[in-house]
Length: 160
Image (cartoon, rainbow, N blue to C red):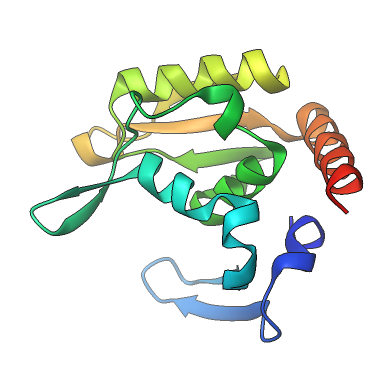
């Protein structure tokens, strides 16, 4: 994802971090990417924020506003790359999207949209008995990332 978003990043980006989690006795790594504000309009950052974050009582809550969402306009290869970088992790050759704060209907809507637009198969799974950790999004990496990278490459060719 870094190479896809690289033209839009700040000079100090990416920031690599490796940290020890004593709860699990293992290291974790993260890569922080920051985009330049000059690209916000082209990358539809404000539109993405208005779709995924709803303001309630002066607090932004992560929730999909399906009424605002025109999937074909929103679900571009770039927005999908941002979503992966912002709210996903890899494990066992799959991408897991952290959709714990989404309603079941919202996750189902995203699954249908991914299939219709990118032909990417996804499903939601229960990860815990706790209500907060109810669902994660699952994508098969090997087959579908090739499709995604091709779509992003096409998009970048036509926008440059």
